[in-house]
Image 1 (cartoon, rainbow, N blue to C red):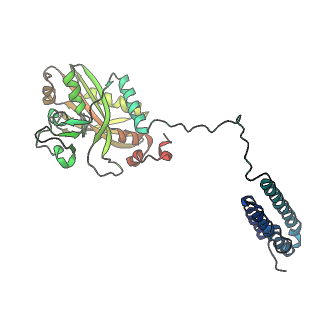
Image 2: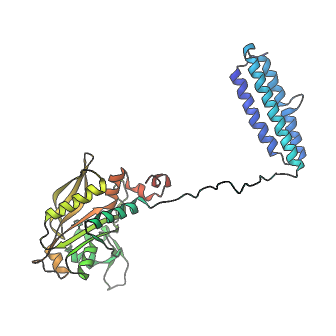
Image 3: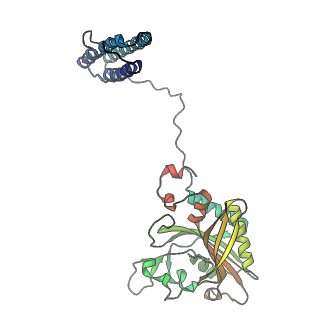
Length: 337
Ligand code: DAH
């Protein structure tokens, strides 16, 4: 008699239990059930019989445990056979009664997309600072996207390769998907007189190749304040208050000299939070040429403007390393927010 370890013996028992229950419950008619019965419980060469023979190969100490498991298996297979016979006698598949008093499966509740959550939060913080939320169109003309913002005809930002121009009839003014939310500054100032405090959050489009920090469609926060006596100090205070509310805790804001056609002076805005400086966008004092373009008198009003990347501030706040994750629509990612 070949020796066999208790582990190997129990593994055989498990395999047989799985095979037997599967075969017996799958039998659709009497001949199929009989075939399954012979295969497992057949007196001469059934698989149960062969396992029983292995019992003798167990070490003497293991034999009582082996015998007990074997008996349980035999009982389980006999029960399964009886159940299958009953099922066929009842005329096939028995239907599980439904207990209508059991609690149902709760529907999975969704929530707002993290970018939408971020937009709402920015709007809420800015409204506490007195900034009204306004919208502008995503399809823009050259005046609002460029000219009124002092971005002249020769400026590289107007290059067709850097913008999504739309096909329009010959001889009509070209339209494009706006490349920045600064357009909304113009749209609001054209309609209203100072004092003004507005923010506008929305989509902008640029034909960039998608990578961890770029996407051909993204969102910006545009801020504009026009009031007599406005200075860069007001700009920095507003950005610092915003950043502290949004990120939580002590956030430092740093300005680096820069250039934008529609602000003078212009700065890049960096924020330090959790020990790391991150570039968040641009800002500056509204250029007198822009105030003139909308019919304001640059000698009597001044203002500041800023533009921040929504994906950037959201990624910073939530610790997201790749902004493409925001748009993959993978619920495993999105459900974390
Ligand atoms: N519109 C600029 C961009 O998309 C960002 C910007 C810079 C907005 C300076 C502003 C500003 O309002 O003052 O790169």
